[in-house]
Length: 240
Image 1 (cartoon, rainbow, N blue to C red):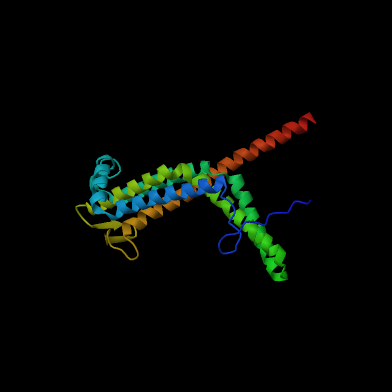
Image 2: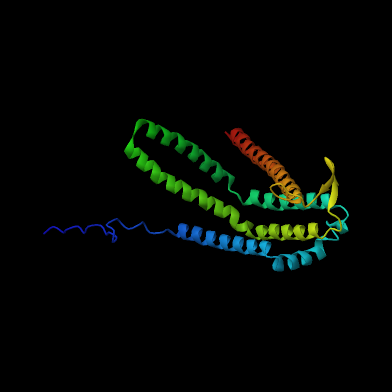
């Protein structure tokens, strides 16, 4: 007697059950939940004056006499705070990022985009289905790479929010609100168009320093690695 094959399991709607969640997907979901919880907690602290102001006053006891300059140079305080955050976040992020894997992921993404365009253009349905399945795998790989990069930086995210809270309390505790900038005089530092002027200066300093710091470290690191590869190739050539 031949053994009869059991039909595949089906859900109540007649559809096949979803594939089981892998261990990598579980870790990714757990990380995303933790990150969302931390982000939500920080948002509550920022939006609630009863929490934000005491934290900012406590931080002012440390940062006020050092980079706060006792409220004398608020523009310099904002720039230094932005530089600190730019360096503190960009340097660890560079070393925690797998740039080789990141480059391979980008190359696969470009190749996939070209392949899916050609498949739709030539109406190759089987290939489109395979590429759509591959897209899910690529998305999962990109999310895992992002998780590996962001996971060690969660503490730095809290530090960034902590300094931002201090700056908020610092700016609104100034004994004056009109300051002079190199490009304009008599500027209300708390005035805003889309957001306050002081936030614009702080984020601008952070983004510019973070970008150039990352580019500089990447150039030095890749130059060093390339030099080592060339030395190994020269050494192996001499032995041959």
